[in-house]
Image (cartoon, rainbow, N blue to C red; front, side):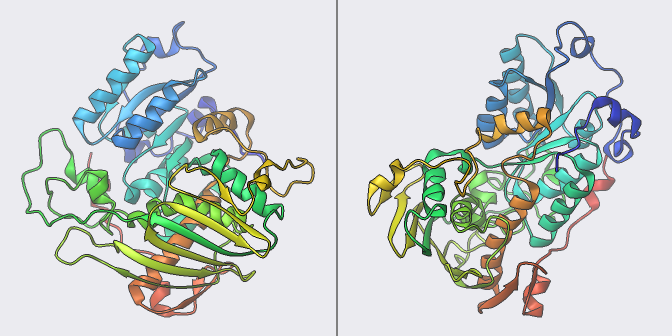
Length: 430
């Protein structure tokens, strides 16, 4: 099914859904956005979250694409907004980019076709749902924060038939694509076992609350998560990713990469395991509230076992006739016989799709042709669900069974952990 393209005209007809919640739109649209200097065929983007990855990867990559134009940058850090806007204006040789503090004002702008969400994990789905309500095309970082919100996102995208693309590259990285291609086409015989290593992250000492620095809207940074006092390093990605209220640690961060290759190779990209067990250690007396070290074992309906361990980035796929894998992110390909990677497959009969362009280019192509992106909302949900299953099994400390069709556990306590309470105080601001 093709995605229904959104247009500025259809968005205007919809009554600018979400404007009341988002605050007032700009009082005027600068003529430079609508005049001769603004190529009407370009896809206009608002970048929400221009910190480390949002700036260095997403914003900079979209700036290299000729058929889009970034017209707004949004961040709760004033300094990051300024840096983002300056980079955009320097690239385009003008002053056509606007700094915006509250993302709702980005969503309210009818001159913005799509949004790029590069925030901490706890904001991903909330912002994406609001962007869809505003008729925007969405390019959003991984992962989801809970199983329940992932399903809500996938359902909303399906119902609205709008474009949602996950900012994940692995299916367009040659090493991981070739591994999946070989395994899906029988190059190692029947797949039996997968081993995935994920990085061990640092332990951060506890910090005392300090005054919020000028230029940071701390309450909006926390947003739907439980409120906590500001501490000096909490907004650094290495730190907040180790705090359960905001993320799931290296399991959901790095796992979204390597476990995706594992599931694709296993023909499991549209489902989840049926059983999981695991154990992990949360460092005592530290900022960290997710396991730093862990071992998790998943079993799929076809009998394939996936073992995920905190170690170094790596993947090994073992079959009854050989194995393939690599060590390190983007590491060289390894196999029982490297000739398996030299085989070619007829696209008409190959059991894997053609490799797509990287995620930024793929998103823009889908904006134009109405096709589904490389990583859909459903794909994000299924991948994130597998990771959340491991986190829940570790939290409860016992083996669990999971029904991928019903998306339920065999355990009431585990079912309760499919969602978390959210805080709505931030919605009443502005």
